[in-house]
Amino acid sequence: MAKKSKEVKFTKKEINSLQQLRSDYANVELSLGKLEIARMQSEQQLDNIQNNKLRLETQYTTLQRTESQIVSELTEKYGVGNLDINTGKFTPVS
Image 1: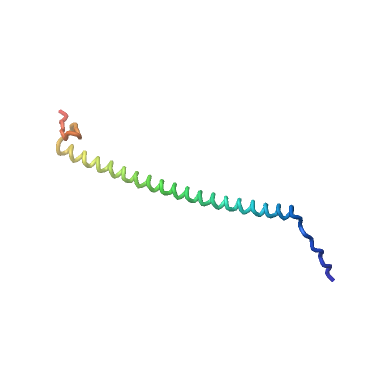
Image 2: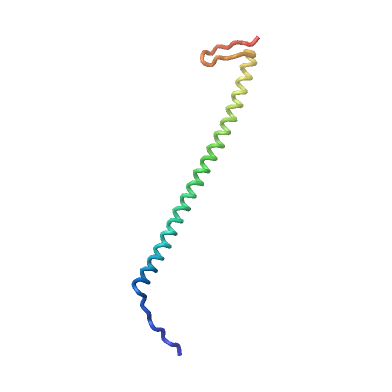
């Protein structure tokens, strides 16, 4: 036959320390969750920066090709020389 256990009542101080421990765990878990969300948001921002960088690098390369094409066309049409972009005056090189 099993012996019946005697019920024990914890002291107020013991209950308070256990409640404080539970509260501390909850606060740490909440802080870890907030930290993880901040990390995810930072990674998303970094991804956006990298995507924008790639887009701008592609745009820059396209502009370089366009510039090269325009220079070739103008050189073929007018020869080698200097252009004042503000006045539109072209001075051929002899």
